[in-house]
Image (cartoon, rainbow, N blue to C red):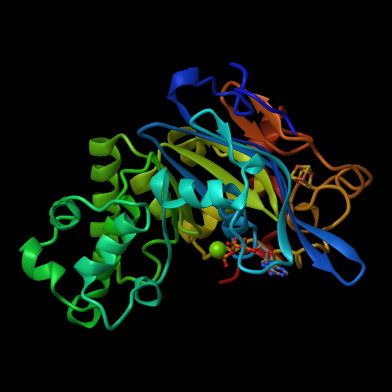
Length: 357
Ligand SMILES: Nc1ncnc2c1ncn2[C@@H]1O[C@H](COP(=O)(O)OP(=O)(O)OP(=O)(O)O)[C@@H](O)[C@H]1O
Ligand code: SF4
Ligand SMILES: [Mg+2]
């Protein structure tokens, strides 16, 4: 593992200025202990988040998004999971080399985290203001805690901060509870917010309000946001850049406009078609045929080849493609430079499998 301050070269070839890069993740790998040795669940994932920028990690369920976020924080749900390689540069420090105590200080203070279900992270027996205060006290803050709690509640655009602070979680709506958790995550004024499916448990209108709040907070606090979602609609509303994951690897990286306008990887093209709910060839619902492979049982060659309409026998089923960077975007496909790959699903005879209705 490298030590010292990273050079001006970034794994993300979109070329952000050194001082703008807040998080620089390089070659991240996560393993889980299996009966016959370690199984690689996340492989060689690299991306950056700049200050004041929201970057998405998207992909189907099981693609490795949450594990990637856990690896950034070096915080895993079970001891069988571990950071198996890579570097996580945040504000000039490689978090992958920090010990548990140093890492605890970084979590909460420099990186805030928000998860899917607000209810499971709140104590039902404690007023929410006190719970936000705990986030401050956990990092040694003793002075002005109550004033800061009220300031945070106001920042979350919740009404009557003092009255809200005194309420118990069950007295708030789901959206309000999520705002309380965002307030707790931002209590220590972190530079980076990691939000893992922060709106999935909420209904659609509340979802939109929380996303708008995140956008305003990002702008106002110049917060870097790593937003994890399986929903490309959420990405379009919230993010500037996107990293698409498939089967534990990053398969495409691009700014939001180009990604939605001209996705380069067949998987991303398929995901977008699924969102649009229709193919361009006929008015019909579309879904990518097949499913995400079982973690660790990755197909040989390109991991997407069993589902890819452009898979070339003899190559895609044997040779793993590298992530090819070009002009700020990247695609993990042998044919990334071939213009025909931009219309992977149009050109393919996939109707019997891929078109579901
Ligand atoms: N403790 C574990 N032991 C074995 N496999 C695991 C463990 N935790 C996660 N995995 C596997 O790693 C893969 C990636 O999991 P991860 O939770 O990162 O997916 P995800 O992209 O966040 O999916 P979702 O959208 O459903 O949240 C999954 O296939 C999952 O089954
Ligand atoms: S490498 Fe082959 S199988 Fe993989 S996405 Fe490209 S064309 Fe499809
Ligand atoms: Mg997840």
